[in-house]
Image 1: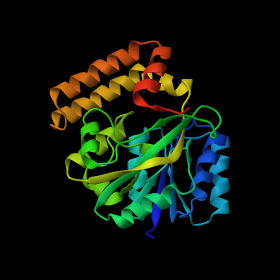
Image 2: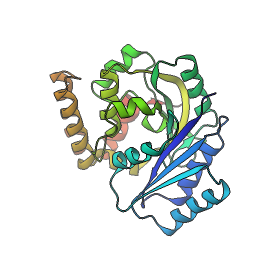
Image 3: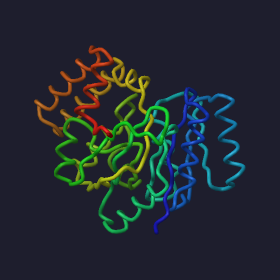
Image 4: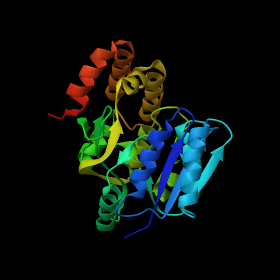
Length: 275
């Protein structure tokens, strides 16, 4: 089975307990990573530094640490980390999520079976406090026709669960400098330049989703960045005028609507509920 690198970014507002859970989930993979690239996106708290130092001591040679002098945002941090990934296949991982133990093995087997693929992801299960209690599923389309269709207005991939080819990410310009939605911008460029992709039709990662997450998603900063990214997609002729206007209207509504309305619409229209 092909070797792969893990790519993670962490910044000062993360909780050390969540970071530990996230790293542990990648170190428990049935297909163990060959390299773990961790980017410090600006100065970190003493607690976060202690967690990182502990893993570096326990796993000598596994971790590659990149330190940015100030917080630059996820896109810039991931671009810097990608430069030092020594493997062609790279597994993205966020610093507060939990990968299921066979996530990477399943993705590697998909790449092994279909070497022409550039992106592989899958469904994620969302939870509030207890990872054992999944409240909703963020599903993603399986076939290329469906993936291309969804990419016109929103990402067809769950970014925290993505494994991709480093060379194809770099050829297509890497992540943008936007504070939000960098993945949607990158994957739109990749798909519209002929990259092939597949989404595993089962949950491969657990994602923390609570009121704080909803507040971040409906913030004006998040909605504005979504519209900026979608404008770039429209200018590159990767979506129609109607697609662009739909996103603009949806994000304006999203930023103004009460949080309970957003919560209801997310659970009924954008997610699959778990009974």
